[in-house]
Length: 172
Image 1: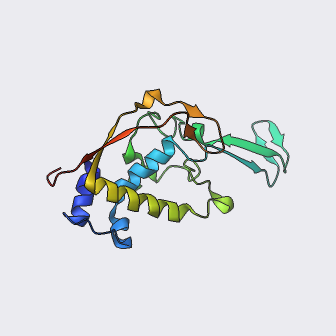
Image 2: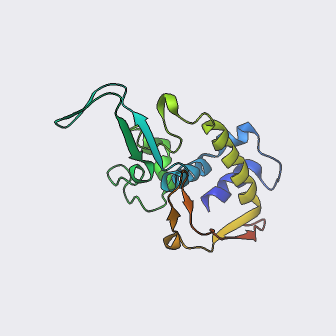
Image 3: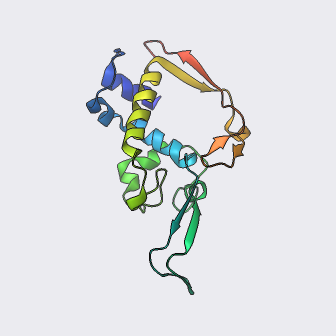
């Protein structure tokens, strides 16, 4: 398990809280979090007004027109993310992001109206996940193919998602 190896290299057998320096070393965990947010963005639908006229093909869309876009679908574009339904954290290694348009991945929106809590959320996710994964092995109980989503302001499932926590032993 790549995350367990990464965390072991940072913390050894210690259960101490992570420092900001530790968090900056969690490259693979960061990729896994980004891939999770690609597949299941918290905010799956956004709207913006065009600030100026925009030409799309032969059509001119006038400024102040509201545009709606589905982040859930944008993140599943096979031209940008091959095998879009598969969980492939390596998509977010620096060398694999270089040629990707910065707005191809927008779990926190982007540009001047992006989420002001983005950095905090990312730090919080790393702290929580690194603390859990140093102590437990997570095993899915609910199968991905059984997930049913509810259309709401945020992306959520209709039923709970169950995960089994198995205590991690020193050699795991």
